[in-house]
Image 1 (cartoon, rainbow, N blue to C red):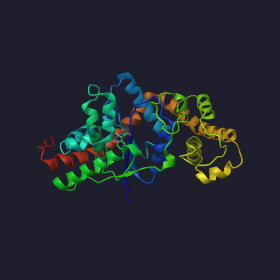
Image 2: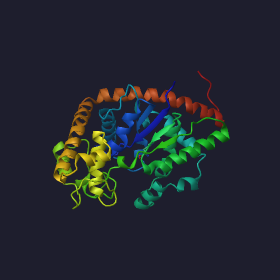
Image 3: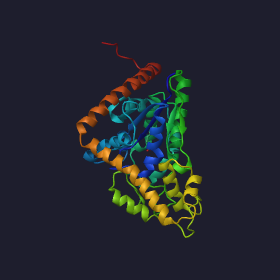
Image 4: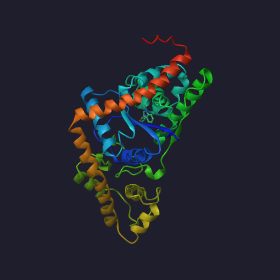
Length: 336
Ligand code: TRP
């Protein structure tokens, strides 16, 4: 039986991924890559919807890809590629923009939030059409499953609508994808401000754990995480957001249910608990960091690997794009 397709991606917008990306995305991707025919992309074309420094963008693209591999995405099993190396993404995005309503795109809450924050002069047209490019990413591969965070659910919903619209107007062409949203405990919050999702753009970096940080820095941040005065390791998101967040992290990294974590630390203080969380994180991050740095040490080899994967992706993508061009009535050049 052929495996169902899976597509997901991350923007190369940081030097290092943080533990929220690791637990909320990479660990799920790693677990799903056997069951699915998986495509994972470093979506650099999405990153340029806001201004990027050229040299940094290139470096971050390599770093992001290296972290995917170091975290266990296998480039022989899954297809791990850089979005801009497969021209079909930009090409299909243009076609899809021709069946997307202006109002429909304008209802995307992420665009509304970001454009309000940036102001009209800093908001690019590409930021507006970003969800259409994301739809192209997904639809090119006849994707069934799209693991994404909650914040991307509306974009997958738009993708479904575009696929259905295209299919009914021009004939069955696209698979209609489903979002796969990880559970609440895969959502990681800031260690200093556990009511906010952990984010690299947080004002203070004291509550953000980076995969590539020196482990001593990470260890210190964990030991300083905010808790509460109850002194009991118990999961309660509303009343005990700090402790609950550390429990989610510990549970995810050790593969234990929250109830097992509660049992393990029953009658023990927060000091003990934090040390265990720290040790689990350090044990998880150390090899990932070492492997990432090793991969980055040989950029030529990494680039070669990515190119091979992009060629594999292009083969699938071109087939879909060709069908699309045909269906909508573009005059195709005869084969030479
Ligand atoms: N927009 C996604 C994010 O910022 C990244 C992304 C781009 C993506 N294309 C995708 C995710 C396709 C899933 C599928 O998180």
